[in-house]
Image (tube, rainbow, N blue to C red):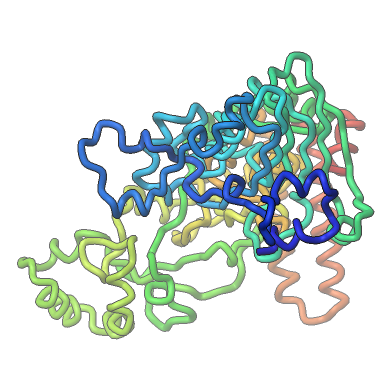
Length: 505
């Protein structure tokens, strides 16, 4: 209706209105302009089938672009395509992935649905047609690699406007970019990258931005970095072996599927085989963890059958309840919710299978997956970690000094995806890329002493009663942080100018 009203007002000149109005009609004719269907899926979805199910057709809503817009494609395609694709994660695409894999060159098992809107947009454009889209940020994600390659090699990028520093769409969990490109081979193309710095300025039309002109051929497939100076520093420190190469794999925390049932706040239960200490991501801070007392009720998948015979869930529940009355008194009120959860063991009171339960009880570096600044801590008390927090089984405490440095934060900012509130998402695949220089034992000992001293100072700060003491400990923490940063810069061989860029970034 709003489009009809727009055509009726004075916003269009007579020539433009003549394109839509039919003689004798009060309202404009929009039948050839507004079409309904699934813009990503054509009737070839049903190829190879002798019978097509009516209900499936209604669900899929296949759409034939060439049939619905014959005049457009006779002329070579659309002059311009503008889109704001929905945000649907790859795991929600289900059976449609098979079709996307056959029909789209940007297919990736981790691809969100907007990847396919990108390619479809260029498919229906005429040569040199213009494509503009509001998209999730894809310049760093692992799944975005194939899309980055497609856009770099097959389109001529005009400009990118990046909103990763501000929140334009209230309530959105991701930060968008506006991407504009032509359906043309890039040749030696240069494009403009614009970073919006201030939400208020943008809303008022006097947008505060940082911008730079970049060569399209210099965009790397693994990640798109839009600061030439930052790229040089990144490449310099990235010459060292990664955490994955040196220390091995990192792991996501435990998934209960129902934290309110299995994670207890301030319980009186002593630790046992089925009661373990646990941290959630919000409990992990820089250097140390919060003073919390949370415990996890843990019955591993398959445990029940090791204790009792039989297959009747009702009977087995009664037997487990008799053996662990206090724990099942807590779990029983959550029975219906626990049965509905996806992540569970063989029975609703069991946790899902996990191949690395034993690693939780080893020394490890732990961190929340969402961070606004470095938040890496060390645990040697056998504390379990709740997903989506992450841990690295390692006893090398010196590593914590490097991870909590400004230089590592700079590195993570280049490779991690920005989320709501300005947080970056430090997934295992990003964390494992952090480069670590080869160090002498003497240097490791020095870094370890820094960790011990700053951890103790944090504890002193927490226990201090007087404001003067708290301020003194704060100053000492800041000084130790600064000393660690200085040493880390030296270990990676940064120049004074490079240090200035890192600290201003």
